[in-house]
Image (tube, rainbow, N blue to C red; front, side, top):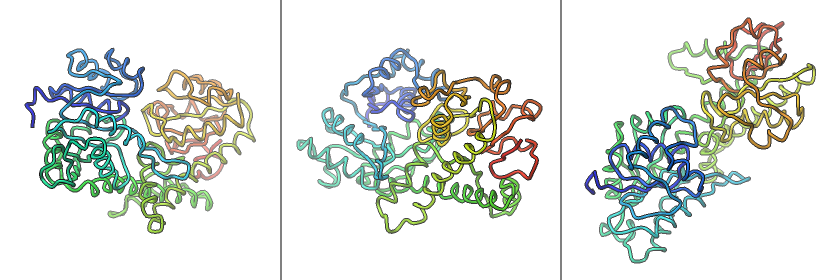
Amino acid sequence: MHAEAELKVAVLGLGYIGLPTAAVIARTGARVLGVDVSADVVETVNSGRVHIEEVDLDGLVSGVVTRGALRASTIIEQADIFVIAVPTPFDADHAPDIGYVLQAATTVAAALKPGDTVILESTSPVGTTEKVRDLLAQLRPDLKVPGRTGDQADIAIAYCPERVLPGRILVELIDNDRVIGGITPRCARKALAFYRRFVRGACVTTTARTAEMTKLTENAFRDVNIAFANELSLVADTVGVDVWDVIRLANRHPRVNILNPGPGVGGHCIAVDPWFLVSAAPDRTPLIRTAREVNDGKTDHVIAEAAKLIEVTSGPVACLGLAFKANIDDFRESPALRVTDALAARFGERIRVVEPHIASLPEPLSRSGATLIDIDTAIETCPVMIVLVDHDVFRSVPLEERADKRVLDTRGIWSDQPSPSSRTSLRLAS
């Protein structure tokens, strides 16, 4: 391993994972180059600012940039460690797209030298790390790659997925356990030495394929459990029972831990990763596929219920929240955004959006006639309120300020909202 003070690291992709990772590595004393295809992102980082909202990230980035430990560029340079943290979306048929990963690997290939380590962090289908290996072997025939030349490889290649929660990324990058999968055991050990620079959690080594499937398994497990809660909420609606009361009471059983339902599932991980497992074995994954369909279907259900409420009321309608989870500005795969988009397309100027983490509405909301307001304006002017995200500021609204509202609460944060009949799992109250 290179001397710590001289270690050079290149992080490809300066998004929600790449930028915090680059900053945390830079804080250890390494010299870090962040590579991104966006010139705007590069300019923002080099000015010591951030383009994403994450607790304490702005101060950390400002500090490491000021010290010269982190800089950004659109052009790759030589380094000792290359970390690939680019998006892995899926297409219209839910088939995974690893094009950004292979593009990043192509970029890395031009800068590789003997002794370097390439680590893929992007959530990926099983076998992607091997595809990166094969691509590097094709592009750099002068280098001996692991898995093809025994223990005589010139470079190391490994897979180590992130396991972080938005809003706690800087803490969890350090404290959470890491699974490190190497193309060979020697590759895993080299990557392990690198992560030991900044990870306090346990670092467990395995094969690249096992590490890839572990990451997908974690998020598919959570998706299936959320789907159970969401399906339970639909049953509760049908029979006229408050699902939150049911879950609260059921969870008193010592071996039951049911999650809370919501308007669907969002984020780049839980809403995406299960499809990678389905794509790998479509005939063997009926449960995982059904969970995805249940969670996506819950969003459609919320849209339909919200539309019914809006149709029988008048005046402005406040949609509370656009993010995929509380207290962040991340809208990736957000069911709240999908609901609001659908309602704005149908009801236009009646829709008011309350999202405290943005300064302007994203497309296509900005063209729909919907307007962005704050929570106090919503309380003063909107007789109908649809709770889509459990931001702390929404939780803080006391009953006396909303007692006269017609409310559709998909997050169960206003349990005291008065209702002329029994509360349902959507807390439709008036």
